[in-house]
Image 1: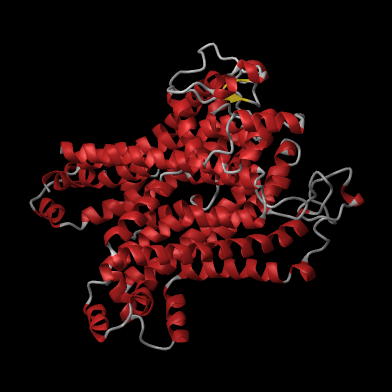
Image 2: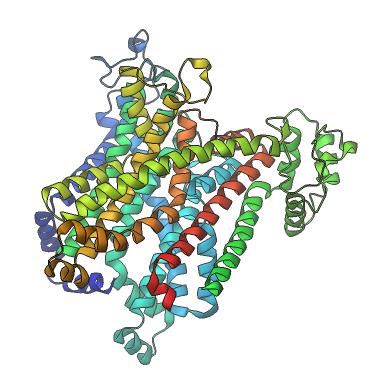
Length: 290
Length: 337
């Protein structure tokens, strides 16, 4: 852990742009991951211009045959809606909900982890117990029970992800804080009379940046999977607006005749998740490589 | 040694109680809902109010939780079985027994009558997946770890990264498209009945494969890293330098030390396996406890949601306990300190 952070300090030399340039040149994995991510971001942003049809429009051109055709490149779903357009529009909710919910989870997790790691004592005791209990839940049980009692909506998805992700983040941050707080510059800050808040956020948190960024990318992958799973289980965004997991769910009854309707949205999820996994791998590799 | 064991046991028990409270809170947070959901959508407002009175649903939440726990462990009679209520909830075991999860409004029978068979099915699925994952992950992970950063290792890394990016429902769709729709070799659903014309063992292949793919990829990465780390230790270098054959070095020194990480990883990551089991069961209509949890949640069957989630969490916690204790037993360094 401390080796990682020393690397982080050394990497601090040079302008941000040149650092990124060097990183990209050294890691093809990172390049591929970022390329896929930017592709999906572009798709989400440009959805109104590049989607051939409106996402919820039903087409008479796709009544007799739902399979891929000249009109509907990826075919149509059981309600005769264009799958390509729905995938393009479906990039929006996932690329919005995943980062927003994860950032909320990080705010909660970082605050709890820093408090536990830096303060120690009973604060640490309480936070650690809560973390233990929440981590003992299989995430899917939390999701299902929570959303079953609150009802499916974007806000409740965010809530479910914050509740299930923040304990892991808090545990990671706590460990990092425990390590960093023993350094001399923290003692120096304390001698200067800085407040605890200043020390944890200005002295400790920035040093934990490296591992946290990698962790964020890994968790983005999990979160996108989680959103997909929720949609697939029927606990995701309410219909009719497109949601990749929900599209797979709607398509499973006709899987025997038209597998494409489930296949294309599945592939969309897989590519987006692998983008984040590749980015995480690339960042980690750069860290070890130095 | 014993004190570690007892402390871990006690902390698991505390975690279990806290977890059960969280489940209770999530499911029964709004008491009005409890009465309404127990009676179903066709009950009149008076009936709901009456039940609300009789169940003392306006008591503080801690009191209600205590009562619920009492019914569960058999200290208290299940108030819903009171014949005066006229709900017709009958249980041959009586209204007071250990493991009384109440009455399922969805299935119209005591939860205890349905849940254990479903649990058995899920455990079967998980055990088969486990039996696939462990040897595969150890084999591939060791192979890659011994060839760190060579082409074979790079290939394994890339493939496992890709596999770890495929959620279970997506790999299920992809595999089903190939083996069910295109080739027609395997059945698309696994109801564990032979009525559909497919023998039972064929019905297990796709669910087990789907489960194993994701977790194997994950565990393989851990085995690889841990083998790589062990290969760089001084005692392995010594073993090589004193002239042991590579095979002996791997068998005697590397494997034994490198296996510790995956052992705990698999047991501690049981939550992943459980989540995977739930999704897989839903995809393949497999009659397990995970699908039951989802169905109960969709239906609003309070007793069944509580029972299924509680049992799932109990399994997760006890597996983690076994993982913890096993790690202590396997690792002499912890034993000494």
